[in-house]
Image (cartoon, rainbow, N blue to C red; front, side, top):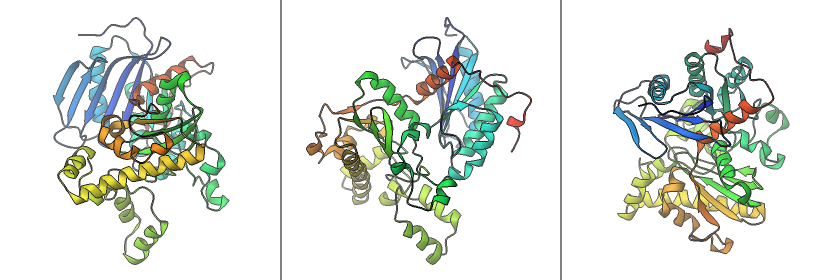
Length: 395
């Protein structure tokens, strides 16, 4: 079955995770972006992978077990399935890019120059950028001659004032790009779009999922955020430490005989909820364990919700009050229990659970990527398409 549409203005949104890949097909010819179908691949790199393609109404078009060794293999399969259902070729392809580095501050068309800057920024996000660049290059091969857009998670936070952006380090290090960037920006942009003219002056957005961050938002613009130079900072997450006394890192390097790779592995993969709980990182399982009286799960859940609550309180002070608290992300949207634990004690701000000032807004990262692509296609600036250049070769 092929889903027919009346326009050839189709955008493909590509959103990759560490072991997953999401893809959306959108008609961008109208005022907003209309989803045609969406697909996902889970558990990439494992033998028990899964591929799914669904309609906007949630009807499953295809679901199959499959094993993919790489993100590129998963991409090829989703493109193959999507082409069989979408009745028009893409006019543009958008990519979620976690980190733009110091030289890329806003969403932009991908050129050789942009790719070089992303390569140069890999050390700012070594767990994310190499994978994103690989998918961009694979997409350029699959969709030769089609504009590709880099949609930067860091772009939303470009409005942060110097007091939030600058770290208390020598100016020379700031010039080298060591500063607060912030992440989950595409998710936050989608919330601003959703609220539209209902956007209050003072809001706190809480994107809570496998990666979690909060953002202080004034009149729709980011003024501060919990994550810093990398997604490792901020509140603790499933496997990441969040903010630590820097002396901990120095101690590990000096007194425990660990090297940089050891510390990176610890802070990004062996910390957070998993470290506190004894190995469990899934919040749904942690809540079940907590209900059964597991003390380690109680510690993990309590530490997480306290960290988020403290950030909300800090942002209330920064903004001079909070008119709206928005929960989003996998945990923020789906766990009423976590929301209740976070909001307990926030009644003095009018943010107790059940308050009209506390709402849930589903994140729409793939749709927001399509909106960014739509804006690029409608821009007066001509879209540059890399052709006959080294974009698809190693740099």
